[in-house]
Length: 301
Length: 301
Image 1 (cartoon, chains in turn blue, red):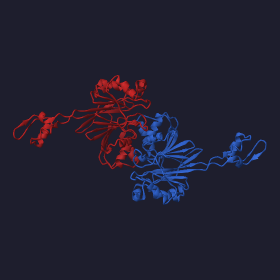
Image 2: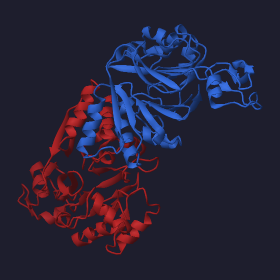
Image 3: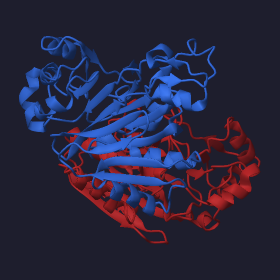
Image 4: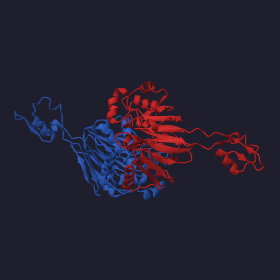
């Protein structure tokens, strides 16, 4: 998985501080997570062929997480998109988007699907041969979900050197990929392990924004490779975090530590802080492997 | 009047090509005209104290003219705005904005007024002691208005040198400003022209975007100081202009010439053209005084 941060700041977009949006790339498929105002400009800056996005996941209906969506949908039409697009987001999102298209006497020339969310328990959203996406219910001022992206256990990989001198039929390849040993026409048998490499390990990315400190999350994100957990505030503004249903860097680290995740990424920073290293400092006291999200920076998972 | 172009490109916003928005400053009052996605970032870049905006005029409900409005309204709230804000725009705009605020369980802490437009003849919108704003009905794919901003005939200006040695009462000042001659307590009379300067000349700015070539406009923008008339296309794409109800540079110049305006500003350029001077070249053949709008550039009227 490759994660590109398009924006990681809260509240209002500024020249060099974009509101929340992330792009997750898995085996060439692009998944957009949240879409603050100006996301389409950030996508252009990142040089990503963003017409390949087929699934958009919106956590909640606060502007800094979705005001860029209608513009992106319109731009896809203007760029001649024909591939279907599916939007996953809170109930109401379909009404907002379709009302704007209707009043502009506009429509998309591609299929636009909505999967509106209402459940307060984890819900299956999407899967293909490579990945599965489920919700992570969060606790914020409005109905909000995080999202858990899990790559699926892959088939075993054929060892091309080992099979070079063998006369294999197509069904032999299928058997090998599925973990079976094979028997050739001449009666010779080969153990699976001799002719294949193990599947690539399963990876998990958990996106959690926006949310108050919520221990119910711990079991949902247990052991993930990367946890993005919002840290709008530092502990000095702990009461404000509680009041606005956001988290502090320390609280994000506490979730990471309790869930024994491999790495924690902080973000959704309030504009009141100048030095982002304060977030790392605060979180590191609780959980060691902490990194900062940064606009237009990419990370491998 | 001072006009700052925040964006002058059509269709989709790109890194250095922002969609339509303009800011008109008249005696310290700020009027925002259209509000494409990312307008609030452009306002920050322009270093304008944009909290002073009290009136927003939206021409039509195509995204490149209003997708930035909901973000601006939200940002005003986050910045602690208390002054009322009035939005003038096509019927439906109130439903779009209020639906988004409702679903975000948000509201403004300032008064938000909507004046929804439906009339197809010129309509009075707003006036104060300095300026009057009326609509300029345009012909586009959806219901659209341009806007005519006219400074009002000012009162005469007191000549401070000429009155230096005179013992004037407050009512004398009022009489002089209103063009009357005065009589002092000692019986001496003074002609108005001796003690005052003439009022500043009335200025007019006409904003016309988006519109197909429409001669009905000529009488409405007769003699204005500056006419902004969209020129999405060049003549080579005349048929496309007609089909999409936009104008060419030549057509914009023809309106300017027929209306005998003082200056024409072109804009709303299609992204298909690299060299903007082609627009000036084409328009100049019809009407001499042509300028190009340019993102973040200011013009005196």
